[in-house]
Length: 376
Image 1 (cartoon, rainbow, N blue to C red):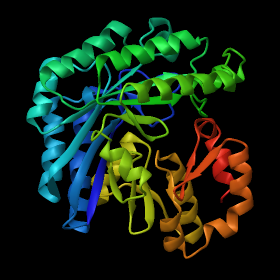
Image 2: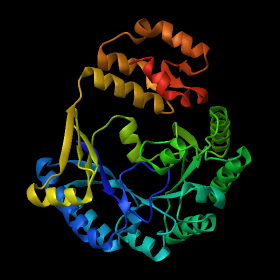
Image 3: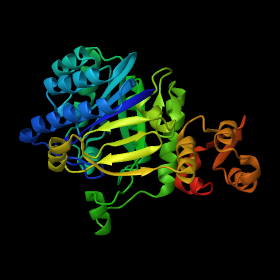
Image 4: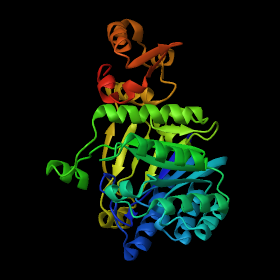
């Protein structure tokens, strides 16, 4: 079977105020034991899942580019030892502008890393300060230019809109700056307040003023139009790419394909079962040392769960849901079951039904969860 691999590197320069992903402050003493545990987990899974054809590896975090190149080499070599890489495998790594140094990037390219995502988030220094980012806009630009100079031909930029106090013109500025750099991929994320984040605390204390939903909507519309006019394809609600540069890692998720996760808090999805590792670096290391794995929970997906995921993931894709394929997979008549709901959502301007593909509109994308609930 073909699959993707996700490798979680939880170490960060500092915790951003909006971030809900599992991460810890950079601790050099923990890095080598963590990488050793990672490689042992890869060996353990490699024996379990022999013969996998790997089409994508994604090193996410945290900040994977905190790791010295010798650690990246060790991780990738262990993956090569245990799995079969396709000839055109995509190997991606996330980077913070503070850690994206040209000489380091040259080393990554030699190791086979061929795709880089830079978390720039904004080209306005005051917004970066609000978000709690460690870099400024000049460092963001320098990181991109350094990556291009090092030889990366597939670079993505992450941006955030709906930042407190952000004006529409400020978002347009960041968007145009990103387009001007001509990356192959641009991801745009609406700021949301996630439980347990510093922004969540500020919001509960009424120290954070959020932008109204209609301003989020205008910013998304501006981005959608601007990116399409610049030649970027909206292949998923938040992800835009130049033709042929869609992220394989993203597509594995959105197409509901199987993947293997390594590292603390990493998720895997194999044979209709989802399982996840413990979200604690020390416990992860100890568990791997004890028995070779650190799984803390799992769930088998039944028909109801598979249906919910097909709807949720399909509506995120630019092409939407192929109704014929959905009918065949679940042996249903979608048009008969949901005729009234589809008509109502179309009238509200939240979805379209074109060539038997159901997709959300830009307006629907902003209330995607509510649209999904109509069908599950």
